[in-house]
Image (cartoon, rainbow, N blue to C red; front, side, top):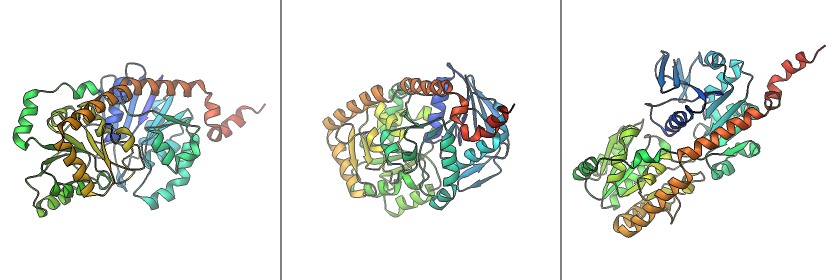
Length: 387
């Protein structure tokens, strides 16, 4: 079986979808033939191998509303001659490339998130998106909660397969005690950690505001377009001694920071945060989570009163109260942290995710391609049936 993965970017480009795609490919490479097509940051085309996975970063000509436009992507999809093409959405440019590639085989999509912020573009693109989803043999979603709250997916419930993200949790257990001690020596003992791209839906501005009321030190891991704005907010609020923006830290190096912290906080404010993989990473390290009550999978991943505390979004006072409650109660931290670790092990292992994905691939291949894509293939079927 050969599967072509088409994503937006791939590590070392950081992000939740990028991390998921890499984990998925690392585990699938022993079972199937894999190739990855993603956008490059520049105009050059670059090929590399990660184990048995060929990763092609296609040259980007321009970006439209954060969507990289790669003119050679349709040709690359066609040349791959895959048994299955697997697209990771949202990525309007990849859908257009798929339709113009001429590929006629089965296609599936992992629907990571709705298009939330670019509402006008989403409305314009809706007919193409729905044409693509109709073409899909299966649509993978990461939680029942997100599936059931998406105005797009409600039309395709029969195609949806719920496959939550899985992580290599062993990676987050083996850490150097000296590295953890060094982090605590530098930043203190009452540590809160948060991680993610510094973009609008992460809600970092509310988390920083919450630190006015918290006796502790917040470490923010990540980079992005809002970094300067968040640094300015920190300085103008006089919080330089309580908030540190660490910048980007690679996935392989972040575990000691989780272990050094007492609490993990995810202050996201929009359903663009469909899941919050970073919650899993912190939970694998036995950390309680403070998250927000979004109409997405976020509060399902870390559950209120079980593995942490869930508060309303955009509420610095509620964030501060939940963080302080955990910082002040070592027994509660231990209780929630143990439950968090167990939840990751039983519900979000990479082995379980890969097994479910493989079954979806096999299910798709068991269905005749003509049945999966009857609308697309109708002209060819008609010509083939002529005497």
